Image 1 (cartoon, protein in one colour):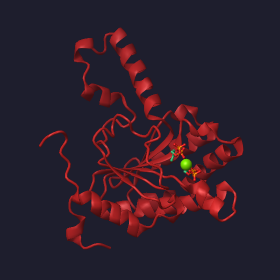
Image 2: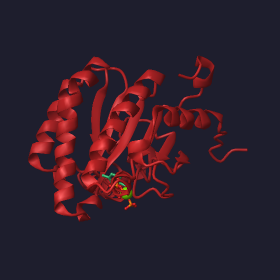
Image 3: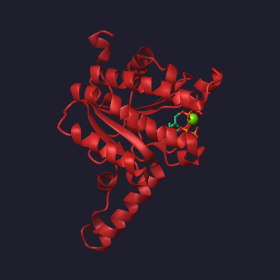
Length: 239
Ligand code: IPE
Ligand code: IPE
Ligand code: MG
């Protein structure tokens, strides 16, 4: 653990694009799903560490709106893995005072996943520690499209006045409503792109990339990323 003085200036909200499970497995001549299973262990570590260092919100990109284009066996494995993760971890999450939340078009998930997820969220609803925000069937463009449609409807019905439209109002229509914007976005596996993750909210996020594949991402490297973030100078357009 770093000393307390190294933990100053922590991000409030960290977003992680957990990438590289497939390549981790390929390197070992294992099926891609073995990489996802190993990746779930990293999730466990990162959630625990986030709570320990006092992060307020951890958003994990677990399944994108584009990931449906994968082979259907892989998609259903990932859906089952989510249920399995919640089944195995929920008690510990509750114990660690973690509050679960999800973003994305949850109505597009298989019904059993929706049920299991909503039940798990309900069971953590009174927790006051780390918010573990799972991005499932999430795409930044899809989220914005859904927000635009809702805003349009509300303008049409007179609930919202056109003249009152503002960036702050848009915020309240997004899946992340009431959450702070991500201060830091981490991506593993050497890809230098956002792949449709938190496009609106990430306008001023600090970005941090590593070649490490997600299953190999350690607590030490995560703490390193947080430490590096803490030294960055965020100007938000000012001098
Ligand atoms: C990230 O690992 C997990 C998900 C996108 C669900 P990948 O499965 O994308 O791994 P690579 O990029 O093929 O190595
Ligand atoms: C981004 O990873 C999505 C998740 C981590 C859930 P991908 O592996 O799907 O992204 P691309 O295809 O490399 O951009
Ligand atoms: Mg990938």
